[in-house]
Image 1 (tube, helix red, strand yellow):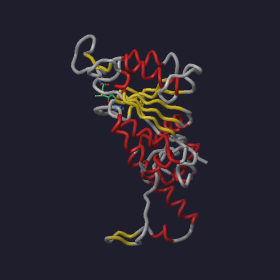
Image 2 (image 1 turned 45 degrees about the horizontal axis):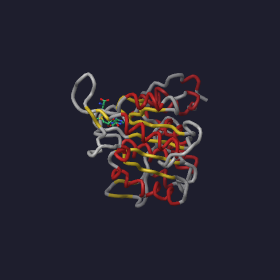
Image 3 (image 1 turned 30 degrees about the vertical axis):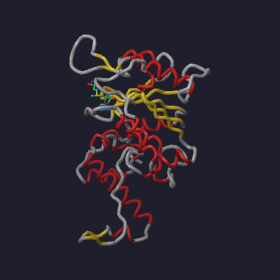
Image 4 (image 1 turned 120 degrees about the horizontal axis):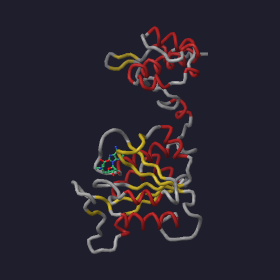
Length: 266
Ligand SMILES: C[S@@+](CC[C@H](N)C(=O)[O-])C[C@H]1O[C@@H](n2cnc3c(N)ncnc32)[C@H](O)[C@@H]1O
């Protein structure tokens, strides 16, 4: 996969050199280009913003530098102009609090793309025409990290990059971690423990030290379901009842949680 990020703060992306993303880059599983939007300005002040049409507070990112940046990246894949099919298998991802909320499912969809361009907004955001024009030549996805407002899109892009890159084949040492973790199957992961067996008066649940893999798996499943029901009833409500077995349903109803479509449990 190749990821290009356009921003007025390239320094924000130092963490893309670190940890498993850094290793993925070093091993060739991932290419990353971070581009300063001001490269595509032509005035002495390298201006990227202007006052909003219609009035109101704040400034809006001007379309011209964004248009040139996307022209260059779409055409060349690395910022240099080149030929090739319009779009060329690229998806533009624009972080905005007005976008669709980012989920693990969306991370999976984006991880299946060959190339992603992230456009980091600042001020009151990017002139809408940039997105409208880009949509004539490539898919455009507007993504929100959640129902709050950040200063800019950089942090949101770092979050999305982590979630996406860890799904790329070969990036995680043990791909099984992906199957077990929170949000993989609509439930949260059970609590996890390591040595020592007792710490500050808190013992590790005995069952995890029993060596009985069947009972451990069932305990983890129970904890995952109860945790999800208590913390994220929205996830429980959205769960496909066909993924539950009769013991799951008995556990949840015994703990006072109603399961939608309980009669469909296996
Ligand atoms: C101050 S915000 C602009 C907010 C915009 N005026 C609005 O009300 O929708 C500046 C930039 O931060 C980023 N941003 C802010 N909150 C975000 C969120 N919840 N998710 C993703 N990006 C966000 C976007 O790139 C946005 O263009």
